[in-house]
Length: 337
Length: 126
Image 1 (cartoon, rainbow over the protein chains, first blue to last red):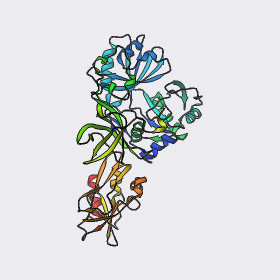
Image 2 (cartoon, chains in turn yellow, purple):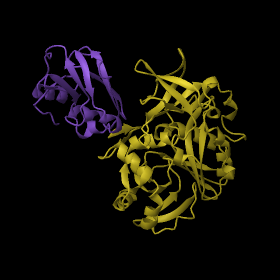
Image 3 (spheres, helix red, strand yellow):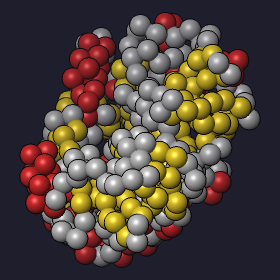
Image 4 (cartoon, chains in turn green, yellow):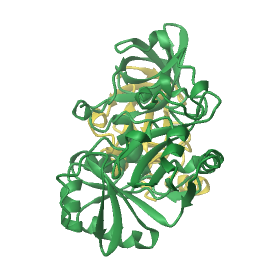
């Protein structure tokens, strides 16, 4: 067990990170991600508020759909990355990182004062993530739901073990899967029902290796208060419109966030130096050995001139330079669309 | 915590087993448990000359990288190639199939810890 932003969470269950990781790639894994912060936004101007507050454009989000977004800090960087779910005409659910809870609450609260809507921290709900190629079949069986028509980034209501569940076809693993929002008091029973039906309990450790293979960023490692999202692979979500902090994002990009594959097996960890010849040209933000390909994979910030795909770089690992290549993410071919 | 008394230990959590004039080295059950899932092991080149206390291998888990030191001066005579594909052998079987490398020592073994003395070291750290 580890402390994670004040939550006591399992890094892994008894079988270990590698097995949990492979289960999510091949079968069905279940994560308790109730530490994620949930905000509910309600009111006649909920949409106008979100359009202004966040960098993606909620205008395009119909009821029952979800998308990835970010909250800028007005100082050229980010407060958090946030997933937005439209649950009703004038209601949205926002999910952000546990560690940024107070900062997001303060920033959203301040912006919301100017709109006819409320922003409420929801602490009465749990969030489970059922992930993997077997997730849909398992959920259909357990919830007696028909899910073949539910596309990625769409929501539906269902009942699991008597509990009302809002299911969203989303996740942080790169696999097909569902995030399940439910009343906290039902969490234990729903968890037991899903694991009883064959879902393997998965911890924070494989959540990190899975998201990295899929090329998803982790706030606090790859993204932070100084990150210009326009200089990351997630620049697509920043839509041209009037929104909080957007004018402070330069988009000039002297450095860029890239995917890096080590040419020789090793682990490039957070903070390790990236070199071009003798010169330091960046630093690693996340790294691991891919449990699937057994190659060293990483993300890092690199001087823009060395950030093109196929650029050959070196990573300093314990005083030795490991050759590495800038690559397109996701790292796994089978996750590329 | 499993600490077999057929071998000796360093306070840096390596075990050392003398076998036919060579020395087999691995990490202890306590060490693998502290590290968590081992995902990668960097082993030395066979033939490399090492001094007692040199860093000769690195065991990487999801959490951290841990240096492994030579318990005696000598020459690396073998490494456990199975760890390349199955680093988890260190977690599953640290005293046997999870061995790291073998040293042909230049001379006698230095003073090392008994199983009991090592347990006391581990208990203090654990």
